[in-house]
Length: 500
Ligand code: XMP
Image (cartoon, rainbow, N blue to C red; front, side, top):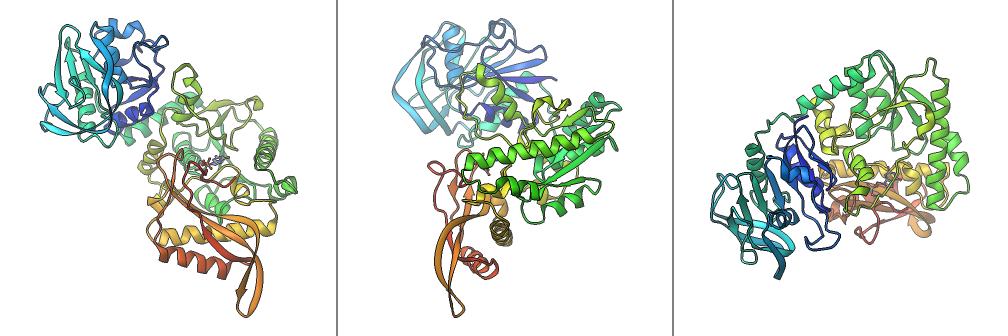
């Protein structure tokens, strides 16, 4: 597919560059720094990165890039690479620029077409360009960077600032101008993506059958809908009821997929979790039982479907290949749905080139209701990691009821779509209270509501006090065994979002 190839030199914003192009309708993919230029590429972007072009281990692009005649845009380190490799000079700045800077445009050129002469941009660099290569001109400068934007030899563009971050005014317009210069068409729309995915699934699956485990989450739900459309009647849907799910989950899945096969494994999970207190052991136990239940079911299917569909997303794919790249990525979690490879299926992963927001757009374009599309993330091991200490039926009931109340009240207040997650955690602390005329002893519910862009970092939400009050009143009033509610005011880092 014709695309912009974005080379990842290790900037924390590399994925963002790809997302921005796609939001604008231009298809882009992220590649490791030394990858050759793809035969279907129409332009390249060199991302920022932590290295200095003079470092011994500085990553350089593949020679095919500079030997071709495609347009190239260098961002930050990318601009320095272009300068250095084409004979200019890069040196450490006397004044490092971090944060906002005032950009003055000297030459409109293609890159700044239609933009004002001055605007605010976002900088983050130690080195800067000192001497331009032959055949280059300066397009814009800031106080700290005399060459904040450059253009040369027809096809090379470079910016010292980061057009991909939202703090850069007109950043999107700059990326759009570059993409237009490359001649790429804007075909990356949700409708087109749905059509392409459908075609691809039909082509790959043919007349065979596909097995999909639904979890109630956004990815597997959208994938299920897509399979129904692309290969009607050929998909087998299965839902493992672990007993560790949110209120009403099983019924919700059943409503959306009336044909789903439900595997009631609640007893089995509870039994395996008896006496398990350590968080990692809990996760492992749940993962193990899930695989057992799922495999037994898969084995029992006659004839066995040829494919297993999974909602793997692009960031997972990038993470697993980026070991070759310099970008230091912390892999956080493996989902419980992470099934072993030896189940004897061929994998079908239609979303492996999509970001989460694109999966949502695909779902929306197929007419799925917002309530499903905008659902908060939920950990694979479920409520078990929100029950500190042992998982018992009584404690599961407490946390599930409390969780439902938190969700309902946050929805009622109109804040659901504004926060990343909102949930309840059961804390095994004996606490004294008075309820009615009685002195009670109960457990504590901690309410956790956080704002985040990607779950990697998060801040606790400054939720209005009256919403917290309603949550607290309802939990102490409606959940047996709870007589105290606290609000978690820890950001991530140092805390994690979940308590376990
Ligand atoms: P933490 O707690 O590490 O969580 O700050 C970050 C995001 O990941 C979710 N999470 C999980 N998701 N399996 C998952 O699929 C897990 O074991 C798991 N643990 C945490 C968490 O809800 C948050 O959105």
